[in-house]
Image (cartoon, rainbow, N blue to C red; front, top):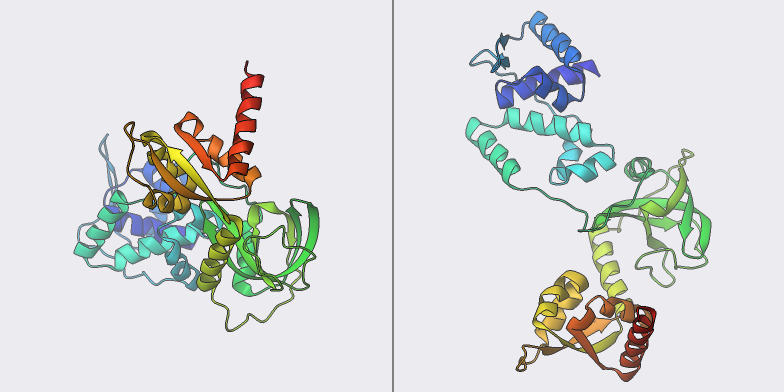
Length: 335
């Protein structure tokens, strides 16, 4: 709405001082012509906006003027919890509300605290997605987030590994993990399999669905009663722990080079960090033996091949043989 934009323009000038028309247009995501019209409207309403001419010119408020129109709407107040993650806030459809809330908060702070807040914003930034991997396309995320907030039943078409299925879900929360969005939801009817979910409980009804795999979602308007004892953070923590315990059941004894010791935490995460804690003393070449938690042999072979010639699997024997077979096939292919 134009009233919200005028207030945002006013708060930008109050918080940042002189700004050019192109700078204001970029912040407000409007044309330069619209900025000129909005500045004229502010002046007509009694706001003392001064225009400085010349190459270093721009718009500024007359010295000493401060507005008190800094009240937050309920949506803007809620969006502040995403202040450290502007990208996900836009994904959820809350980007504009977050920007407006931050402007209002800065305007309401005493000068010294507002300056400190600006310096923190200039020095710290959260980039959620992992390196070398694009985030999932999530065209239905904003609609799913609205259903989570309003406790509305979701009718979904979901793509799992074995094929697409229809699910009617009670959406309980959203989690951003490594740049990937997950919906935590209770199925209205128990699914026939948990293969499409993350950290599913055997016999349980609350599961985690990868948002990027939703092919279609619909909110027919039906409401559901949120379980009073459900706590999202506790569920996700236990779900993640259970998933890792279920998948990384095997242990590989691996001899690794000094370079592989640096790569292990990056490529194997917490499992790699724990493996380094088991390292024995280095040999004459600086190589050490570690115990690395791995998944099934089929998955472990692919994971360990990433280390290339910087690692040697010593055991268990079946995994060593599987890795040797894969290396021999690669050698034959590239002969």
